[in-house]
Amino acid sequence: MTPSPRILLCGDVLGRLNQLCKRVSSVNKSAGPFDALLCVGQFFPDSPDGLEEFNDYIAGRSNFPIPTYFIGDYGVGAPKILSAASKEAGNQGFKMDGLKVCGNLYWLKGSGKFTLHGLSVVYLSGRKSASGMQFGTYSEDDVDALRALAEEPGIVDIFFTNEWPSGVTNKAATSDVPSGVSDSADADSTISELVADIKPRYHVAGTMGVFYAREPYTNVDAVHVTRFMGLAPVGNKNKQKFIHAISPTPASTMSSVEICAKPPNTTLSPYTMVEKATPTEAIAKRPGESGSDSQYWRYDVSQKRQKHGDGDSERLCFKFTSSGCCPRGEKCHFRHDEDARQQSIRGVCFDLLNKGKCERGPDCNFKHSLQDENGSASSRRSFGTPSSNRSKECWFCLSSPCVELHLITGIEDCEIELNRVQNSLKAYFENQGKQVVFFEWVFKRATHANLQVVPVPSSRASGIKDIFNLAAKKLGFKFKTIESTNNSEGRRLLRTQYDRSCSLFYVELPGGTILTHVVEENERFPSQFGREVLAGLLNTADRADWKNCKLSKEEETKMAERFKKQFEAYDPNR
Image (cartoon, rainbow, N blue to C red; front, side, top):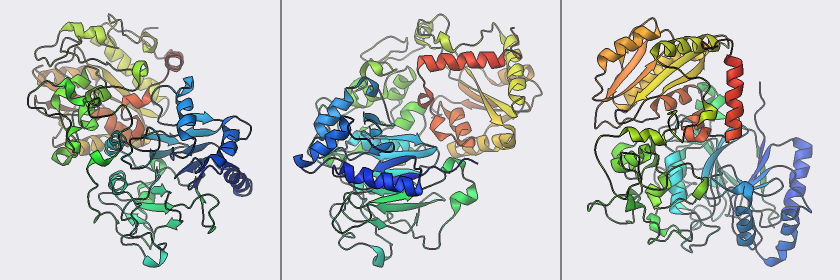
């Protein structure tokens, strides 16, 4: 059994890197080894006097003993050091797992989610401020991104922020609450809302100057508890605890009994009485994100659309835009816009739709101009029947200049060959102790569909039908069932129910049973439905979105070649 990761948590460092690293080295030697150090609160010095010590680490004259991550991107020297780090070639693009500042030191910028030694980690860097500084403040976009992440399946293991959430001491034992904390004006109500949505197993924060380990509390609409921990600054005069060790088992590997466990001192959630945060206009926007520049409504020239408002409802819902369905429905804070959804289907960058620009520039893999239904750049909305020219932008069509040839491991002419490949894949994975699930999303406006193949451990195969039916029930529909003994017969029966006037989703289960659902014109059906359900079954929630699975072209080529070699004995075309 793989041992649980061992993580050190630390409060405000305040540039005292020598003292921090000496303490970490000592703890690592006596109680380690530890896998990583996560720092909350101000990381940089309070005054220029601390810069010489800090710069020793940046220049490589001193070193961090273990991989260290920080979110407190403010203090003396922060703008200069972080600006330089941002320009490094290795830090270009969309990196949620940290920008490397120097050896073993990583800056977690903005907000995001990544996997750390099997743990699902979510963070919000900076503080709430109206100053508009480039570093040290979080933006409304950072908050929006976390609200979207909160809708994704799976349990977050660790959420760390700089500031404490408002109301965290509600319903807590008063004898354990540090003096002056319960009514502190330094706490942040936006973080209270986020942590209530995200429901992490651990929430860690700094900036308050004291150590506080709250009793575990229950979460609304979740079976697991959350533990909040506030950490004191490094080298504080009152000798309060500034470093703490945890060794949590990743939630993705825990049993339901372990997830549901509640210690005797567990309280109710402290956030059920917290008022909503102030309007998001009070949250600082970073330079370049002023109201005049961030005109994310420009993709829509409809007279009904108003310009940037004060509320979240003017921002697009990432979940709806990317998948066509949001579990919050009318209760969602963000806008569900079908026009934006159609642009997303055509490959347009979400940031462009939402903010009017994309900061990733040439590193972004999506289109940075609006597309009409012919797949051509357009400055206005268009309606009608899609053209075959859309295949020019398709990654799968062999005639497309955009085709990802390095990922193609075989080519088939017709359905007879398709059936042979399905049977070969079944045999290949059966030899590995796995059963195969096939699913297909046939969108009527698309040029073609893609048959997806996901192997599932045989020990979990019996639950596949139930989990798909449960997911369907949550979305408000019920699958129709087609009983079949082979691929060809199943697809023949499927065609008798599908007249091409509507879209269709179906999943072929091990054993031949097919679950099918005809999607009506105005039905909001998530295009990633099959992936999301199976990612939940396999405890790999981070892979529900294909964008999270992207690798470099070199890695993809190696992966495809490795599969071709392993599959060679089963390949019907050899």
